[in-house]
Length: 481
Image (cartoon, rainbow, N blue to C red; front, top):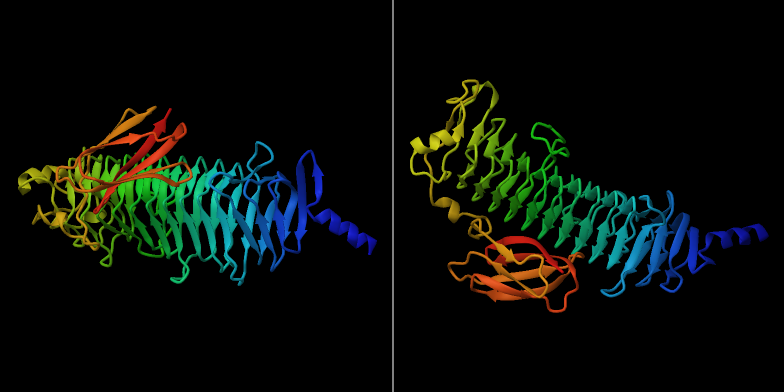
C-alpha cells in the first residue's frame, strides 16, 4: 500500500520548484491547471484517462520537454483563453518538441482550444483516426511548429486562426462522412511548406488568406474551397504534394470544387487540375495558370479570368475539354493555351474568350500541332465574348481583376486603400490581427477609396480583405509602425 501511495504522488501534478509545476503520469479525476501554478512543465507523458476532463485556465503556460506529450484518452481537454489572457503551449527548449494527442474513441465530448498560442512544438494538436467527437480550435495562433494541426479523425472546426513558419500548417486525412466534415474558415497562413494538405472528401475551406507558402492547398479528396486568396508561393492549389508540374503525386479520391478564389503570383502553377470543378476564380500572374493533367465529363471549368500568367492553361493529357468553357483567357506572356498532349490527339475547346475578335489573331496565342507536329490540334471556335460574365452556379458575376493600392504601408496614423469601383458598388472592408480575429469592419463603401485610421491599434502586422456582393475583391498585409 505504501508503494502505491508513493507512485500516485509521483504521477500527480503537485511538484513545484521556482514557480513551476512539473507534471507527468496519469490524471484520473477532473483537474484544472491554473495560471497561478504555471508554467506547467511536462517531464514525461501525461495521460488524461477516460471520462476525465483537463481544464486549462486563461493565462496558463504549458511547456513540453523531449518527447513528452499530453494524451487525451477518451477524455476531454478544454483550453479556453481570452482576448487579453491567452493560454500558451510551447517547448521548454529551443527544439521543436511536444504534442497534444487526442484519442477520443466513441465518446461525444467536444475538445476546445480558444485564444491559445502554440509555438515551437512538434505537433501542437494531433487528432487521431479513432476519434468521433469534435475538435474546435478558434482564435488561436500556431508559429514555428512542424505540423501545426495533424488530423486523421472525423469532425473538426478551425476558425479565425493564424499560422506562420510551420513546416505544414494543417494536415487532414480521412474525413469521409458527410455528417462529420472538416471546416477551416477565416484563417491566415504564411510561410509554410504546405498550407493545408488534405485527403478527406468532406473538407470545406472558406475565407482563407494564404501567402508565401510553397504549396497553398493540396486537396487529393473532394470538398469545397471557396473565397480563398492564395498568393506568392510556388503552387497555389495542387493535387500533388510536391510543387512540380510533372509529379504524378497521389491519386485523388474525390472531386474538389474551387470557386470564388483569387490565385495569384505563384511561381510554378496557380491550380493543378485533376478532377476539379473551378468556377468564378481569378487566376493571375502565376507560372502556369491552370495545369490540366486529367479531366473528366463530371467536372467543369467555367467563368474564370485567367490572365498575366506565363502560360494561361497547360493541357498535358487529353480527356474531355467541352466542359471547359466561358472562361476569359488572355494577356498571358507566352501562350494563352499550351496543348502538348502526346500521340497527337485533336481536341475541341469551344466557347471561351481570348480577348480577340477573330481566329487569325487568336491562333498565335495557342501552342499545338501547328507549332510542333508531335502534338494534336486544338479547335477553339466558336469563341464567346460574353458568356464568361454571367454564368455561375452561385448566380454571382465574375469579379474582374482590380488594381488595389494601399498607401502608405507601413503607416503610423492612417492609410488610404484605393480600388476600382466605377459602378459605385457597396464594398466591405475587414481588418484582421495575426490571430485571425476581425478587429475592424467598415461597411457600405461606395466610392473608390477609404481612409483606414489607426484607431489605437498597436504596432505590428495586420491583414485586410475587401469584398462586395460578388465575393472577395482583394486582400493583403497592413503594417502599423
